[in-house]
Length: 82
Image (cartoon, rainbow, N blue to C red; front, side):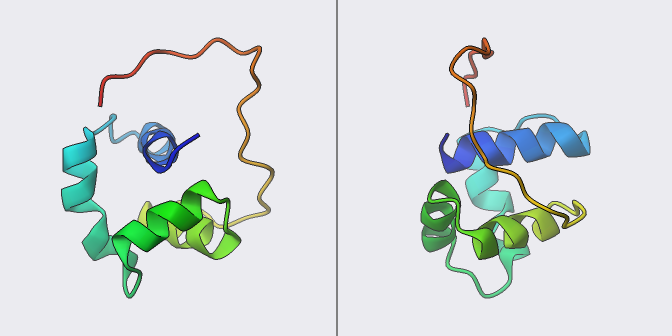
């Protein structure tokens, strides 16, 4: 799962609709406060808890106990063009 997959999931959860990579690259950095966007995306992909919490706050999601960010290989996924 890459950073764009996580951001797309957060968009769906919040009802924003899935944005393109370009739109995310434009919209997200100002909402992350002091985080460097590229470093944040790398840390998000590495499942860094601080980066995940920063993203959840940026999306307005409640910060609660986090389970693993894993996709089960057996669950079919929708192909996304973003």
